Image 1 (cartoon, rainbow, N blue to C red):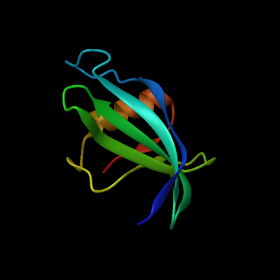
Image 2: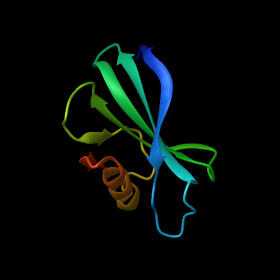
Image 3: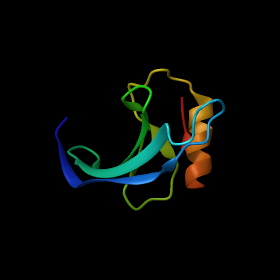
Image 4: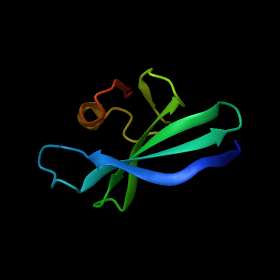
Length: 97
């Protein structure tokens, strides 16, 4: 799959509020890419300072209001605490596993 950046500048969306996790240790950034098959899509990257990078990701077509969908492959497949924290941060629907 060929991807070309539309807006390669990551935007810090905010910090996730998770039980027993220091505020600021897990956060969300947003980017937009042009997917060869799906066209322009927005990506959310859940980043962890503990893990040293992305721990979960979501996607949605640009300029739509539908739910954010889990990007696959995803490990673990089901992680409802993170999905709920992202939904609370955005005030939008997030569909995990």
